[in-house]
Length: 143
Image (cartoon, rainbow, N blue to C red):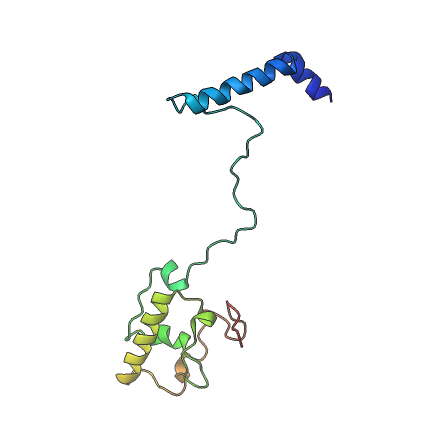
């Protein structure tokens, strides 16, 4: 209540305030200048960043600017299951769609060139550090 009383004391009576707002509205609708329509009300909403927005995740190959090549068997073996030789999916590896397709094509090409085994992971690369945990996918699978 005290703020309203101060506001009235500074700007005059309620009738003067109503006349000023009617004038400003009529000027903004009939005036040709758009700069006159800009108001300096403190009650307008302000733009703030979304506090609940998640950070955008970037795939590990894009982040380090790595292009998968069929001759880089050590890198490609990271995206292959050590037991079955199956290529891990995007929901497990966390790769973007383009890099996942490049990795799959490079693995198939390396297997066709006999650089990689098709049914299991090469024994030399079993103890390499993991880029991701296949037991805990980045995006949960629907099954």
